[in-house]
Length: 254
Ligand code: TMP
Image 1 (cartoon, rainbow, N blue to C red):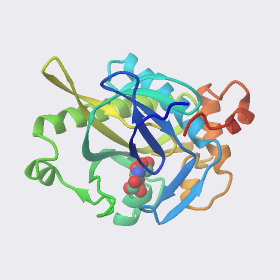
Image 2 (image 1 turned 180 degrees about the horizontal axis):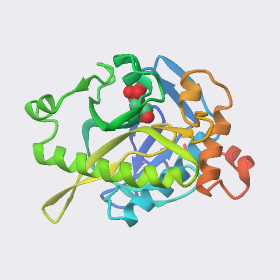
Image 3 (image 1 turned 90 degrees about the vertical axis):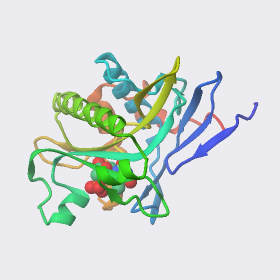
């Protein structure tokens, strides 16, 4: 097998050079990390499920006109994406208090927020992804005011659409993290959604029971982590054909 050039290795994914210029292959690992890499583990089958879940959600978003880096799924663990220049700011959209917002302001988890709140974090492992303001982002040149406006407008559309989509499957979209990149076409630059959307970077709670069906099960040692990812895929109607057994399929590449 020919070895492809590894462009970047993150905590949960690897990016390889794609088959054509301007493309990358995004490989989904089973590795999980939390608390800025202080907690590490493996969630068996997570990569296969996140590849499917992200494919599904990015495709649906594409259909309503949200530009994304996603091109197509290649196999169990890989998808073809457009190569973009990643903007070093993560956007977190919150609908319900949880996680760091609950800790920071002493608001009990599960409290509905008066309106959706967007937060910005500067992507830096060394600094532990500090929260930043619009002022920091534009003053330090991480993104231009227009880029930021586009990212916020897209994030709000994504939130509205995904909240409804998940509600239809009996899940509450509590909060989620998005990443964006710049894509140049014919001298023109567009901001597009990048990275992934999966239970790794969303909080999803069962509407009736408030059971957590996302990476908080790993972060908080709640057990049944694999089952939670499978349940999200099942509710979206996209469990791999062979069911959970398929998730153990051999890794397709090195
Ligand atoms: P937080 O409450 O820990 O700040 O997380 C908010 C949302 O962002 C939650 O859905 C998890 C997601 N997230 C990531 O995807 N990556 C991260 O590094 C962090 C801190 C949060």
